[in-house]
Image (tube, rainbow, N blue to C red; front, side):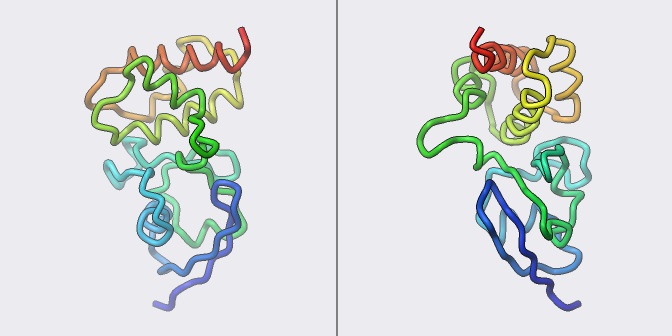
Amino acid sequence: MSQLQVSTTVNGDPVEFICEPDESLMDVLRDRLGLTGTKEGCGTGDCGACTITVDGRVVCSCLVLGAEAQGRDIGTVEGMAKGSELHVLQRKFLEHAALQCGICTPGILVAAEALLKDNPDPTETEVRYWLAGNLCRCTGYDKIIRAVMDAATEMRGA
C-alpha cells in the first residue's frame, strides 16, 4: 500500500501528515502527531476513550481512517485548554474528583464540551444520555455528571 498525504486542521492549527490508507485517525493523532490525550480503550468504537470531534461532530477516532481527516477540522482534548488556563470542564473535573485512571477522561471531556456547545443548559438526564457512549470503569458516573452540570452553570454565567 502506498502512503497518503493528508492536510487538515487539528485544534485550530493547520497540520499535514503521511499515513497508511488503513491507519486509524486515533493512531495518527497519537503516533504521528504526538497528541496522546486521545486514548485507546477498545479499538471497536464501544468505549468512547478515543472520542474527538470531526467538523464539530463527536466521533470515535478508532473508527475513522486518518485519510478521512483530509480537509476536516479535528478537535482533541489537547485543544481545550488555552495555554496554561484549563477549560472550565477540565477545572470542574479536578474540583469534583471526576477522574481516576484517566483513560476515559479525555474522551468524556471532548464529548461534554460538544454537548455544552450544542446545549448550554442541559438537564442531568440529557448529560447522562449524551455521555452514554463514554464508559468509565473507575469512578462511576455521579462525579462526572456533577462536574459537567457545574461547568454548564459556570459557562452560562448563572
